[in-house]
Every structure is written in C-alpha cells, then in structure tokens.
Image (cartoon, rainbow over all chains, first blue to last red; front, side, top):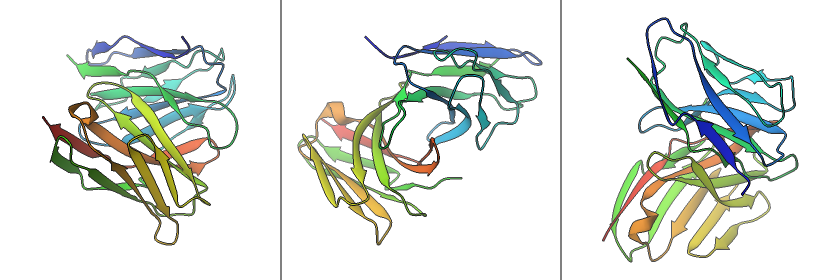
Length: 113
Length: 110
C-alpha cells in the first residue's frame, strides 16, 4: 500500500537537544510538507519542498530545519532554538498537477522532558 | 496566516442528525478542499470543489461553494458516531502551498 510513514509516533526532547522527525513516502509524489498543529488548532506550515534538493520556508520556520536529499524522504529537525516545540507534527505530500489532494502521515507528537 | 476560518468551532449532535460546518476564506481561489482528522491521527482528504462548481456530493457529504461570499459549507447527513472528528477546509495559498482553517470539532452522540 502506498502512503506516508512518520516516525517515531512519540518523541521527547531534552533542553538544548536537537531532534529529528522522519517522514518517508512511497507515493512518488514530488512535493512534501511539514505542518505543526497545536491543541485545538489548525495546521501551520513549517517548510515545504517541491523537488529534491530544494525547499522553502513556511510561516513558522524559525527553530526548524529540513533536508530533501531523496524524493521519498523529508526529515524535519527541531533545533534547540525552537523554544516551544511541544506540538503534533504532520508530514504531507502531493502529486504534481491541478486540484490534487494532500496525503498525510499519522503524525509525531513531540514533548519536552 | 490563516486563510480559512471554520464555524462553529465545536458542534455536538445526536446520531442520525445532520451536521453543517462552514468555512470562510479571504482571497480568490481555484479550489477548496475539506479534510477530516480523527483524534491523534493525520488528515484524510474528503472532497474537493472547484471554483466553477456550486455544489458537490460524495456519499453522505455535500459541499457547497459561494465564491461571491468567499465561503463553503460541508454537510454530513445522517451522522454516525464514527463521524466524530475535526473537519478542516484548505485553500491554495500559492504554488504548492495550502492554507488550512482552524477546524470544526464534531462530536456525534450515540
């Protein structure tokens, strides 16, 4: 079955630590996204990538970094500069073309120890 | 920046009743999408309506779009307990960018 896999499902970060969230897709989609969701809130865009080796900042990129070395993979690093990292992180991908829906992974919940 | 705003924020209904939720947006769009999110899970695409369409159906879902009012509504008919979830609208916010609304939390009581 094609889909998006996010891991781990739960992650804990210590003060001053960088952590990396994994996102892998086997849908052969070109564009991939990272969103942050706070309790009872909508999704806010962190970073997105349209093609390999290229990515753009979203609305809340500060304190986060990404890479896109392979089409299938778009890992997100939450750096120690992100002072309020506790949230639910969602990865998504989309096929090129008009009127395409986004496909989402099942998220990673990040908490501070 | 939030483009879509859903209304109401929360909705509680009895099983078998209809649920209606609304989405307003700010700029011109070429399509609008609705998604469902079960608790602790990712979003699932429900339906897409194009700007030249006024109404679209999919099973128990009916979506309307009024581009003059910059608003859309999602109607779920004959609701079931399994429909309990948060529902989000999403609109294009630039090339390959999508902006999600704040969501409506629907609770269907058995």
